[in-house]
Picture 1 (cartoon, each protein chain N blue to C red):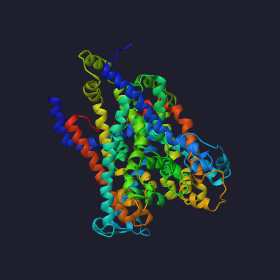
Picture 2: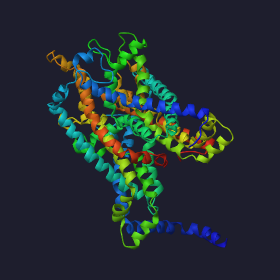
Picture 3: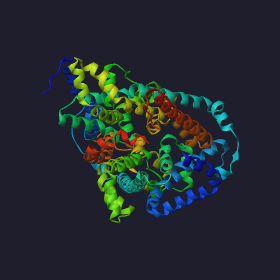
Picture 4: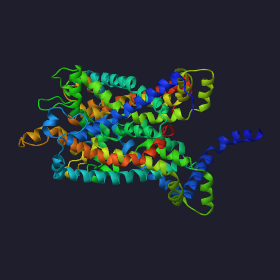
Length: 287
Length: 331
C-alpha cells in the first residue's frame, strides 16, 4: 500500500470529487431530456422536473411512433451511416495501406497531399459549387462525396506501420500478393485502429447535418438530423394548431426526438470505448 | 573519393539519359507493384475531386462569377471582390465577423484549453478502476452527440417563455444571475458564454484522453525520486507531470491555433439569430449568409480565401515558433 502525504491526500479527494462532478455534468442533459420527455404536461410546465420524471406517460413516444416522416428520416440516416461508413473505410484502409509501404514511389508527396487537406480547406462556397456541379445532391452523392478525413487515414497508416515487417516478408515468400496481404494480415492485425476509425466515421455520418440540409432537395432523402432540426425550428407553431388539452408539454416531443437520436450512440459507443482510448492517441496526428 | 568525382563530371553529360533512366526505373517499379498503386488510387481520386478541385474553385474570388459561364468562363476582375468585402456594403459585417472569429477563438483557448488538461490530471489520480471507467464513459459521451442534438438541448434548456421555462434558465433566474424575463438565446451578450460552455461540455472529456495518455506514459521512477526528496503534490505536478506532457501540450496548442478560423460554424449557425449576429457572427457564418443564403458567391469565396490563407499562415507560424523554442513541431 502506497503511503500518501498530506498534499497527496487532499489532491486525491479533490480528484474523486471533481472527476465525478464532471462526469455527472456531462451526462445530466441526456438524463434530463429523457425525464422531460416522459413527464406530464403540468409537472413539466411548472418546473418540477429537475432530474427524475413525474406523472410518467409515454404518449409522446406513441405520437412519435406514428410520425412517418421521422421514421423515414431515421431509415435514411441508417442508410447514410451504413453505406457512408463502408465507403469511407474502403478508401481509408486501401489508401492508408499504400501510404504505409516504404516501397511506394513518391510516398512523401502522397502523404503531404493527404495531410495538406487538414490545414488548407477550399471553403464553403467553392465546395458548394463543386458539389452542385458534380451532381451530388442525392442519396448516393451524399455517401460518395463526403466523410473521408485525413486524420483518420493518418491514424490507420500509423497502425499499419506498427505491424512487424517480418510477418509480411514471410507471407511474401509464400507468394502472397498485396490484396491478400491487406485482407489477411494487415486488417486482422489492426482491429483496434480499424474499430476506432469505424466509430469515428460512423458517428460523423450519423451526426451529419450541414451539407445534407443545404444540398438535399427531396424531402424523402433527408437524414434524421435535418428532420430533427426542422422540427425544433417549427414545433411551437405545430403545437399551436393542436387541441390544448394534451397530457404532455410540447417540449416533451422535442426531447423525445432528441432521445431517439441519442439512443443508438448510447448503445454502440461504450462497446468500442476500450479501443478508441488507445486509438485516438497523439501518434495519429503527426504527419 | 575518386568515385564521387567521376559521378559529378559525368552527371552533366548523362543528365538527359539519367532522367529517362529514373522514369523507366519508376515505371518498372509501378509495373511490378501495380496492385499497390491500384489500392492507392481511390484515395488519391477522392481527394482530387472533393478537396483539391474546389481549391481551384477559389479562383472565383478574383472573378465576376456568373453561374452560366462557370468558374473558368467568368470574367476576371482582379482584387475588386476583396475591396468590396473590406470597404463595400458588407464591410461592417465582415469586420465584425473577423473580430468575433478571433475573440471567440481566444475565449475558447483561454477557457477551453486548460480544462481537459486539468481533467486528465485529476483522472490520473483516480485509481478506483470502476469509478474512473464509469466517469470516463460519461465525460466522453457528449463528443459523440450531434450538433443538432446539442443545440436542441441548449435551446430548450435555456428557453424562458410564458408557458414553460427550461431547467437551466430557471436555475439561473433563481440564482439571480439573469433577470426574470431574460431570453438567453435572443440576447447578444449571452451568446459567447453559451457557445464556449457548450464547447467545453462537449469536448473537454474527450480532449482529455490525449493528455491522460501523456501523463500515464511518464515514468513512475521520476515521481518516486521527487517524493524521496520530500516534494509535495504541487511540486510533483510542476516539476514532473508538466515537463512530461509538454510535447503533447505543444502539439495540441499548434493544432488549436490552426483551427482558430475554422471554429465550429455548424454550432454557431444552429445557435445564432439576427439578434445575436453582433457577438456571434464569425467569418465562416458570414460566408454562409452572404454566399449561400444571399447567393453572392464571388464575395463569399473571397472571404473563404481570406479565411483559408490566414488559417494556413497561423498553423505554419505556430509550428515555426514552437520548433524554434521547444524543438517540438508537427513537421
